[in-house]
Image (cartoon, rainbow, N blue to C red):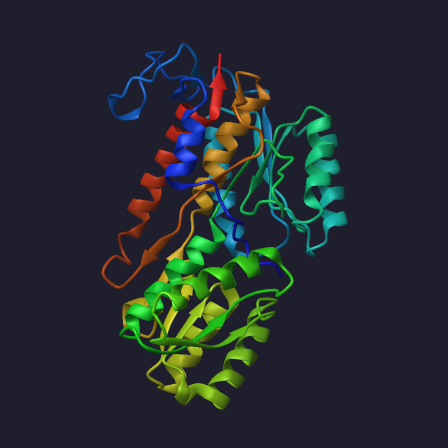
Length: 366
């Protein structure tokens, strides 16, 4: 199963320059707020339009993951909260039992027939999902690619909001190397080898290793072990039994291997530094007790919240995307024992910045 991480994002100074080249931005406001044309923090936005959701009662948003995976569970609560916050006609979270593109397509068709008219989708197949997006947009439905962007350089959705895969993997590898004292042997645990996202994670880890100038060696990259926890546990157990004493660090860029590594290293008693991904309760507990050194958390709540808000603005035709198909990094954050109890503050702040970025740079509103 594919780990829900994003392909390369438009981010950094170059992206800012490209996005800023458009017309002046919109002011952020939600349905029911006074029309004072002032953005959060008191900054007045230039231009005559505003990202004001005047009436979202006719908007029904469907948040549709590619299949069952713990990563998507925050979408449920965030979607329900967004429905109330933005006074929408409805928000649903629905997923297929299997990771199958045709089954996801069938589900999307069913949701459209039930009256849902805006879609936030994590596509099962990065190489095929653009066909699905194009079909939805041809029917007049706004579409957001959430949690993952299509493979290649084209996105037929209105926008993509997800993690920068390569950057997140790079951060995780850097954190592992730091925990190792800057030298030693590293192992990378990840997802499906043929997935384009996995290849970006591999590239991010390789970049961090290369920057050590040979002080760190990448002993092995173990792929195809994110299908389920049992598969990951067996792979990690076999790895430690065969090579555990030669390993100084393990970085996991997929969910199930991260949980498996945390438990296996603790049970083995080996002095292996572990950096995981996401904020599973077991991972956070392991950071607190010192058996895991760090984790890189993502922002699924921000994806669902900002994605739903932007979709509503598009569905009501109050705004359009300045650059259809633009990709935006929803954020990734290194969490250590020092901030394991407070990291969500930074993540919430990132979500507010994302809304401002959409209003100021990405949306053109009337």
